Image (cartoon, rainbow, N blue to C red; front, side, top):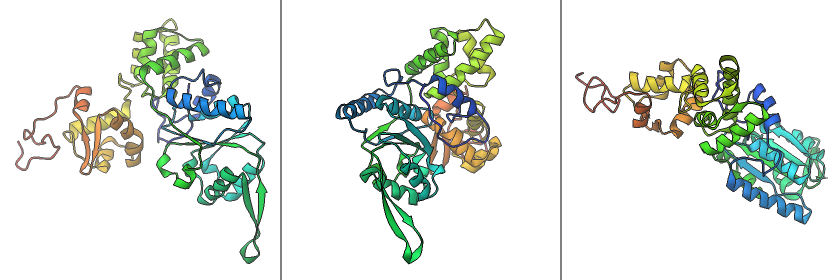
Length: 359
């Protein structure tokens, strides 16, 4: 039950996409845990954050600024709301792309209440002028508002009440060091283990009033790519199948049949993922092959293959990026039930290169 709203948009909706759509956001609001004790997974981050918040409450002070990084759907937004709840403070939510000018940020900061939590999603996409204003706001709780232009411009200092900034990013490397250094606590969100996702699924099933057995939860968890948001989305689709095609109870067989209908295989690959692997293996002998060529072979845009399909395939050890192009691993051949060609045999060698004289 730990989700976010960050990430790159795919050209088509995918059941295994870790980016939240409108339906996901509506359901997540009802399923999100309300405190750290209820939050599933991320044991280290949760323990460290609990210490930070307990210490701040004991001092009667606002909590240090918090930076949360990690892939979409792992719980960054949820943790920001839990931070506000644990501190008994209101929360204001905005995002980096929405702050294009320093004046936009100044308007938000000047209206904060003392102790309020400001959640800034996709903080790495904030404009540079706003980012530089944020340095002083985080460190000194003040901003300089520029009035006028040219030689007659004057800076009016504006004092801010103490607040807690919670920044979330999927690309921590894009944050400049001066901004990263101003966060008192940095937590990196890891992908979930299947056992943790099973706990997520059981809790969501209770809240959704869905009957599911342990084997059914394990089947869904194994196909969820280590991401709670995907696990909950798959659970809802399996629930629909169970209600229409069965007696409403989710078993391993029902879960497998339902996800087969939605083309999500036992390892969590969907149609696009398998199309990329099949093109790489069957058309190019396992590679290496260039990204643009691979994208044409599957009928998708280059960016879709690179940003939507490849990250999971690389993380699963099914595909490798090399200077010469994309290469399939032995695990990819095994997953699709294919036998890799022997080096030097056939028109395409094991290296993916056409033999000079053919077979």
